[in-house]
Image (cartoon, rainbow, N blue to C red; front, top):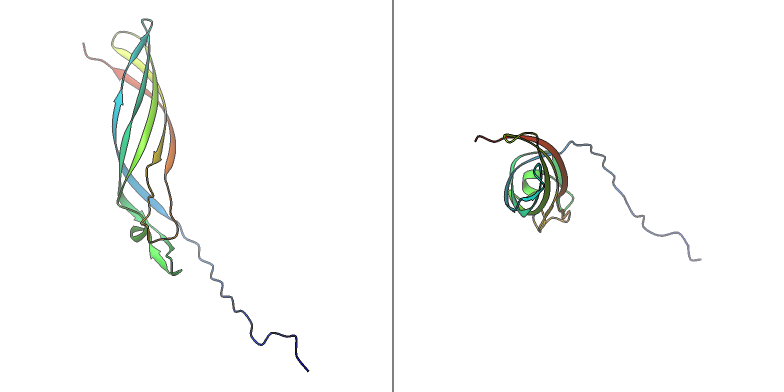
Length: 137
């Protein structure tokens, strides 16, 4: 008589691991912009360029291709480049005082992780800001 039961069983091992990952980058923007005056008090300034992102601190663990836990510093690149686009809207309160509303986006031009790791990642961000400018005259 032939048994319908398999002669082997697939073994599955499960590991639960919780970690807090933290990456800190120092961003250096290289931007070209041009200011357009709209009337006496309003200016629009579109800007575009690249941003150098330097990894200055990493804390935490992630899985490698062999499913080992490795430090983030071994997975993430210490430098990657992003494209950046920004739009600034400025209002002149007086001749010396200006208020700016800034909005922009940035996306990495390549992977932020080394190619030998299966978790290929890109970076993107949106940013908004309000700034005050005092002009010495």
